[in-house]
Every structure is written in C-alpha cells, then in structure tokens.
Image 1: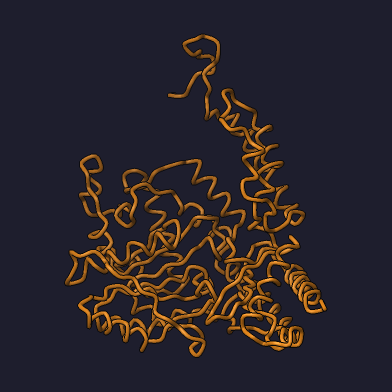
Image 2: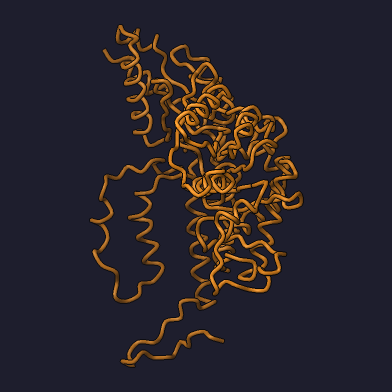
Amino acid sequence: MGSLEAGHDLKNGSTPMLNPLDPEEFRRQGHLIIDFLADYYKNIEKYPVRSQVEPGYLSSRLPDSAPLDPEPIETVMQDVENHIIPGITHWQSPNYFAYFPATACIAGFLGEMVCTGFNVVGFNWVSSPAATELESIVMDWFGKMLQLPTSFLFSGGGGGVLQGTSCEAILPNPFRGAEGSPNRWNQPRKFSAIPTTKDNAFGLIPDSLESAILSDLAVGLIPLFLCATVGTTSSTAVDPVGSLSNVARRYGVWVHIDAAQAGSACICPEFRHFIDGIEGADSFSLNAHKWFFTNLDCCCLWVKDPNALIKALSTNPEFLRNKATESNQVVDYKDWQIGLSRRFRAMKLWLVLRSYGVVNLQNLIRSHVDMAKHFEGLVGMDKRFEVVVPRNFAMVCFRVSPSAVGDRFESCDEKIVNEFNRNLLASVNGTGRVYMTHGVLEGVYMIRFAVGTTLTGYRHVGMAWDVVQDCAHAMLAKS
C-alpha cells in the first residue's frame, strides 16, 4: 500500500518508475554491503592506517556531474574499493592510536541499521513514542551503571538525553545558566579558558576558578557557566569535580562536567572516583561512541533539572501541538536540544547494553587500560624516552627525552627537543603501520598513544612500540 508499482511508466512511456525501497532488492543489496564490511574488518590491517592520499585526489577519479541513469550497486561498491578506501583513515584499525578512538561493535552497528531502517524523526513523544520512552529508559540504565546520583535520573526528577556529540550537549548549557541568572535576558558575552599547570597535573584548581570569577565580577560581568573536564583531550587530565562545584555554587554558576572520552570508564568501580563530587554539578555528559562501543554518533547528557532545558530551548508552534504534550505526562526531546529533528539513537545504545551486559563492557574498558599500562611500561624501560604526564586511563603521553636528544645534537634546548619529537611522529605515521597524534602542554611537544579501538590487542601495542623505537633509533643514529 502506497508503494510504487514497478510497471508504472513515466510520461515519456520509456522508463519504468523506480521503487527505491523494494524489500527484496533491499535484502539483496543489504547482504552485499554486510559482506563487504565483514571483509573490510577482516582485512583492515592490510591498509595504511592513515590515508596516504594528497588533497584533491578524489576529483580526478570521479566524474564532475551525477549520473543521468542508475548504476548497479556492484559498480558503486567497486568504486568504493578503488577510490574511497584509499582516502579513508581507518579509525577501526587495531593499529589506530590517534586522537580518541571511535569504538564500534556488532551490536552498535546493527542498532544503527535498525535506527536508520525505521528512519523516525522523534522530536516529540507522539512522533514515535517508543523512540522517546526507550531513550529515557536506557539513559536511566546507563546512569545507574555510572552510579550517578538519583537526582540525575528520570526516577529521581532529573533525566538524560542522547545528542550527537559533546559540542551539542555542551552548547545549550550557557543558555540554561543564563535562564537562571539575575541577568538572564542578556546573552553570554565572554568565554574564557582558565590556565592549568603541570604542578596540578593540568587539572583546574578551585583557587584559579574563584580568581577568574572574582575578576569577572570586578568588571561587571556575571559568571553563569563552568565546564569542568574529566579526561582532557590533550592529556586526559581530571578536574576536581567536587571542589570546583563547591566554588561555583557560591556564585550561582551552572556546572557542567564534560567526560566525553573518560566518562565511560567510570562504570568500573576502580575508576568511579574520578567523578566523585558529581552530586554538586548540574549536568554531566560523555560520548558513548568514544569508549562505550556504540557507533558514532551517541553522546549521553544527564541533567538535574530538565525544566531548565525546557525553559531555555522549548518551542511550541501550532503544528506541533498535541494532547500528549499538553498532558505534561510525556517527554518531548525537541525541548532538550538546539535542533528539532533527532535520530533514534537509543536503539543502538539499547542493543549494546543488552548484547554485552555490564560485566563485559567493564572488562573491555579494563583491557584497554591494561594495554596502555603495558605500553607505558615499555616506554619506561627505554632510557631514551620519558612519560610526560601521569596516565589516568588508556592514553600515554610520551616523547624522546631532552637528554637523549642532547646526546645527539649537543643541546637540550626545548625547541630542538620539540622539533625532534615532531619529526619522530611524522616518521612513525609515515610508515603507514600505525597512527598517533600529538599534544602540547606548557610548551612541551608530546606524542599521544591512545588505546581504545575495539580490535586492538597486545600484539598491536607491541608492534606500535617497535615502530616508534625503530624510527627513533634511525633518527638518533644519523651523523
């Protein structure tokens, strides 16, 4: 009912009308794509981890206009193999240690398929009740796994929502803070990064926060929002959540805790202390697509006071009015985000939780931490290298030490040391065998080794260290 009939002709009578959602053709092409991706994962190590192409490579390989007539999926997939894969940096490679990994798994992939297959636009409850209610349920499940205070759960008057990324989760927070501020009709006018130092492991200290607040107050600005971090991108530093929240509370500042990557580790009791004091915060977020095996995109945001979101973000045009909303007995997630449209992300998170269970998810995270510890131990055994900052989770920040560079260049000047490590990273990545990225803290250039890709094992960690040592040896041995 409502589908296009295969025999229906266009006006010119020459071309049958296409049915773009024919169930049997969907089944055939779907099997083909699954087989293609299964082979891709099976053979992923044969590809250079980081793409080796030059900018603009693809325009010389593809036509400059879309095809007038349809092409078979087999032809398209051959072009994927020949032209697209060379331009892909393989984030699912077990030899990928750059940025923060984007974990994936069978359940997450299949959940994404189901989400995409239903293709619902669940902006309010009535537009797809199951999408809304499943999201509320899995967010409470996940919150309990993290041992969040009940005030962050629907069962305790708070609640959770799934966004695309941390940026989407954080962006509304200043406006929620402004909504509760005495100066609420003014938009936020100043955003500041408060410096941190090695003396405090690059975590934000309460005295620095209070000093920044007082400085703003002295010039007539009203502080309204603090974003503290559990697991910074550069070094996985951890801000003291509880003490920062205590300072912010004295000045009526909304506190958001961004635990984009490291937050998932807090389902393990031994890492839960990193978010101690979370009861003093107003909101908390993490990316399930970073370290919770839930394919991109899936950012989890919990808030104590959903009404703060709704007051700041709610829209209610006539075409969206309905009895369920007006009953005040349902959640309309459109009022918890900047945009209107939203995906059925809860489906894939639900499949991940049910397919693996809490214990297996904990053990997967622990295995990544153990592999990072192993790599840290390898670095420590080679006197030419040093770990730059303490390891908190599954990332090691290291470099060739100034003394080793000094022996080679007869100088320990920081610029020379930084340039040597910059060239070392380029050499390592140039092999195509592994991929790592860098960070800079207090002027020190360091190589970041982030463990977390689903397929990574100890042999990949060992091989990565061999590549680093070989490249360093070649550079240090040059006369």
